[in-house]
Length: 311
Image (cartoon, rainbow, N blue to C red; front, top):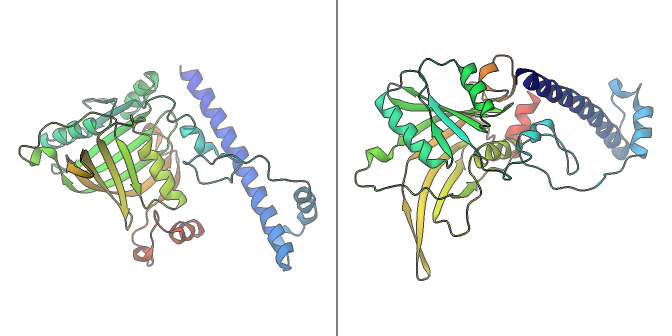
């Protein structure tokens, strides 16, 4: 098993290195093509290889058009990046999710984890105990778990949610705020365990689409007659989570919120799993103390993500 994991990891790293090299060459060709079309001087760093790249441009075509797979940043209509591989077969089989907490969780965190388990179909809750993170990830890989979720707290208040996609990542980390649990609302009744329909609002950038993929593929494909709806609504990079059931009354539709409710804010994406985060590359990280941080919107406006890439 360990040898197989090492081989698959080497293959993944090789594909990623080849992809990075191809992206670098394609960026140079695009820059040369733009210079020729706009009749402006070619950048000095590209002049030595400009003729060779121009010949390659003349013999290239766009290739077959293919629907882009949400989940990666790079590539056009006919390319697919190594990050896309993690979600290539999403939807073919139902996800299998394992949920745990930090060590020595409080009573409120245990209640919140029970509610989180009911949100995600096919999810199981596990007591953390004294297990190391590497042991948990290894056990999840051996049992074909697709996503590993860790919920953290501060003085009994849930304040962080980490979603690790297996077997290789990525790992997305969110802060939690405004948590209202079902246990806090009297006489709320039971929660439906139907596969929910999903509503995503205002995820427009490449980073927003990757975040949407991370959340969307935690849920299996619902049946058309399902009466349960889960909403992720982005407003100023804060993702509001709401859960409703609905029923039709004539021409009217009555919505009933069943909870819990909370807000999520993405603060980091790592290209690795939780057992090796220190060695993993950082795909994106929130920098809230920069002078322009208050003006940027990374999930809903194109300008925010482009500015972050340039820094």
